Image (cartoon, rainbow, N blue to C red; front, top):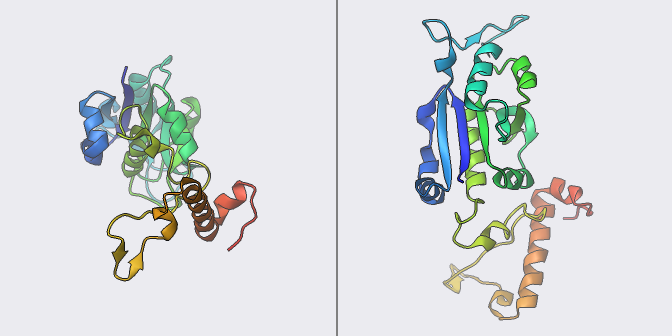
Length: 234
């Protein structure tokens, strides 16, 4: 059975977007995963297909209505659907590679893409939506964030990457940023490949890569170093 993805959005034409190309696109064509887009406005009840209203308590912008979203969610992922229900939101828990692996190991995901000022809190609680953030910045809507999340997930599905080791030997898989990479030519504008990488000594190469990963992580992401329980050094 393929990995099932349902995306609830006001802009279904944004999908599959980049996910229709390269590894994800081939996997989509091969039915390794499936993509369903749901137009939230189809669940509106008025002739204008309204999905939002003014925020309670006043303020700028509009808020997506709980009743419309609840019907869209129930129509797409009814009770008993085992897929996690995700809401792309800047206030959500930061997405991690560990969470991506958990999601990739499941049956699929249902993703709600918010717009305007946000989503009525009551539907978040009533439908047990897991809020997910891809970074500390604001996008025009949840669709670009959903594309990022799905790209991270799909590449980990069985058979998508030609070299399965690629999915385990990269940044964040062991709490470290990835080590530097080199390839031919041996010399480029006066810069050469580190001798250890052409030594043929696999133990030395592994030790060098580990040391470089730890150095880069300490320099660029001390928060990751702290989380791993290691002293932060420069």
